Picture 1 (tube, rainbow, N blue to C red):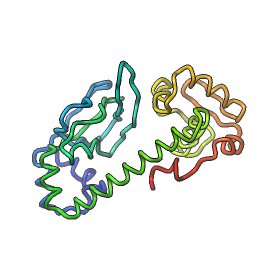
Picture 2 (picture 1 turned 120 degrees about the vertical axis):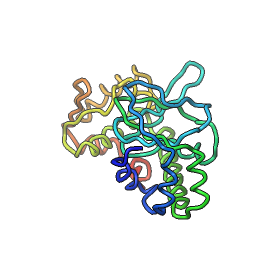
Picture 3 (picture 1 turned 180 degrees about the horizontal axis):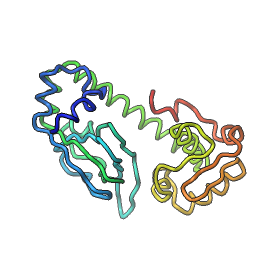
Picture 4 (picture 1 turned 135 degrees about the vertical axis):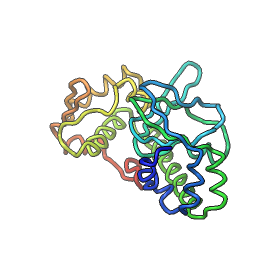
Length: 232
């Protein structure tokens, strides 16, 4: 793997405190590969041969069942996926594909498990990472089970607005058809939901969103950090 990637990867919480020796051992068999958009990287049910690290671009984690498909998460730089399958030496529960041109580091899973067994700092970081992932899953389940589709969309827009800097106008980070699957909706229901949010100050022009009444939208959405703040 090119040396110029090491500093960015070393800065991840997962690798920050491990020893230099073990870090070198972990990445001696790793390599970096460039992928064009819409390329499948892994498929659910396959063995977890590599831990993936997104260095640039974006990756869609998705799942399928009985001809249906849904997006589970979007992975952006610099972050890893799918750690739990790597540690358990278990099949992937999700598939992954690039959303845009992406550069990805692939670390052999057997090396991750080997260093996990000998580097205490790395092991603690993995436990912390998996605990954070578990908490994120709980929050996503609460969002799906406790909120109506209109409330899910309203809170998604408030989160996206915050990620975009907090301005009244911002862009959706992916196309509406994919957004519908993320929110557990059909494209038709999503379209109707956007129209319903006009009453709360949401104006939609393609993928551009303008919020004309911040207070009204917030009162309707009732954002809750125990659901919407994925950093805790």
